[in-house]
Picture 1 (cartoon, rainbow over the protein chains, first blue to last red):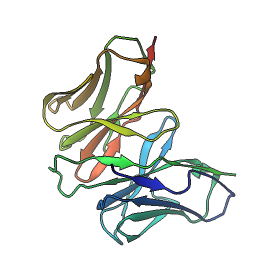
Picture 2: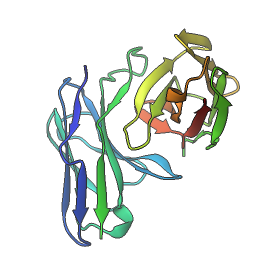
Picture 3: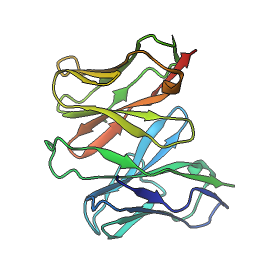
Picture 4: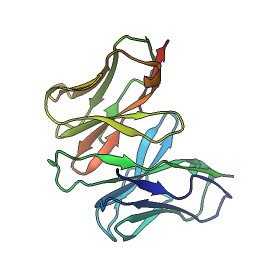
Length: 117
Length: 109
């Protein structure tokens, strides 16, 4: 089974703090993603990475950065946390190599609930 | 901006009935389509994927795709209370996976 592990499940941080959310996958997947999920807004892509040290902005990258120094690890960084970043954050990974690969799917971690006060 | 639209619900069906969940998407070049189930407080889990026009069946679940109409649906036969969850439609375009807002399904005993 694919395992995507988010090390921090529940965090409470103060406004202005720097926050690190860590994600590790054990299936040698090339692509990794960070989403946030908010009621009424669904899942929104923050950043994704298709290779080590590579990153691409998603739909809502403002206020976030990412780091991928090793293939299995993808970190989301909130440089200066704000209350509007209170959300559930989901890490995911996938094996996609080509758009026609029939085994394409995306696997999610269990989520990190972040509250910024 | 690629869009994936779902009725937020809740969709309420009695136990044993067929639940029909619908999704439309805006980008004609989208090529893969997925249905995820998400229980409250949990992360999404993949239940069906479909890549070509027509129907794909897996147990009580049937996914239907119509690329000309840019429409994908999920049918759940013999609905059970344990099927009560939010169902997310996801559309793959290139290497970008875009999710709909989800439909909340309630199956009443």
